[in-house]
Length: 460
Ligand code: ADP
Picture 1 (cartoon, protein in one colour):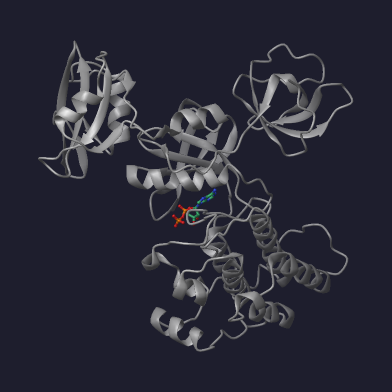
Picture 2 (cartoon, protein in one colour):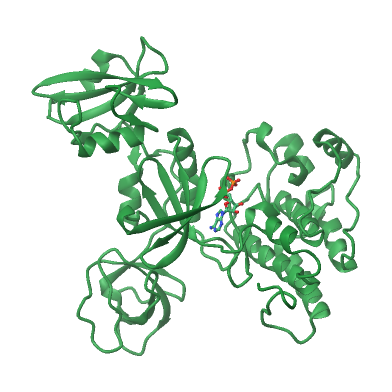
């Protein structure tokens, strides 16, 4: 059925190859991602842009389907074949009826911390003990793996020293294969199309590399630990729902020796480093306001989706080649407002009610946004300079607020103070903050409606 309601920005997946394009039509392969630009006067066709080649042309609506967002689903698993702590006989039971290459992984009951790979072969089940040694996993002391995902991937392609290659995972009851769901929805990318470049950042859980995916410059976050990868799957799921010019865009994921999250490349890195390395002489106030407005618009969009970021800070804002600021790092983003690991909260950015009662809301994001404004206008200084975390917590609770950064426009400082109202209800929402910032923009750069470069000689 042809769907006629796609709007500009909709991401589609090609259902089949289109190699013999007529004049004005776009060439693409099955699985390619295409972005709708506009409707077309030709019935059943849209103007679209190929996400990888950048080429534009007409596509037939019947040849593509909309790329769906993944549902936030805790049963989505990167390791659906992992059954946790079950005994050998239980594993044998689960691998019935016997089928060569049917397998599962369990945690050893006799040797806690070790795993066992159980494979059905010739009507029997063989149990291979997986030993954890020097931070790596091994069955035969010859092949070593970073994690279970890595190990299963290897033995699915190579027999190595085990009885058979792994052919079919025995899925744990109640889990869904993340690989399958990602692939069905068009978010699974192919590692053979990826060229990895230099390391451009270190995250808490893995390194970030620059790369190229089918001609497009990308950033790749690699997560090797399987438990962490599983947690990041949630961040990725959230990102599949989001499409906004001020949010770092997810292009897809690659499953290979763990999880690789592929996003658009933000060549100017994170906002803290951007501001610290350039400083006042290079970046003018008008640009600072534009960054503030960019983040505010991204957050307004998140608010409209009823999502709470929980970790908004300048280190989690990235800057694109054309100096647009975009919010990233949705690791803590949650739809609901309950439960979090208190020990991990970024205290200097977190609203008092979130620190005390774990009450996260858009209004606690607004508090963090106030701190982010302070970071922007102080050119990347650490907030609450020279104060310990305990001091910050106690003093802020008692009503202390940071002073205005040097040369900060009074209107902007006023906004920070509004964001830091003790009572969440009294803080403005992001739409209101945007309106006020827009007024500041016209005050600081009258007549300029378009984005200009950063101050002279910046090379930005
Ligand atoms: P963390 O785990 O600390 O939240 P990330 O793993 O998201 O951080 O990123 C670490 C660093 O890698 C960032 O501060 C930034 O400098 C760089 N980085 C992350 N994503 C991108 C991207 N899409 N483009 C360019 N650089 C990035």
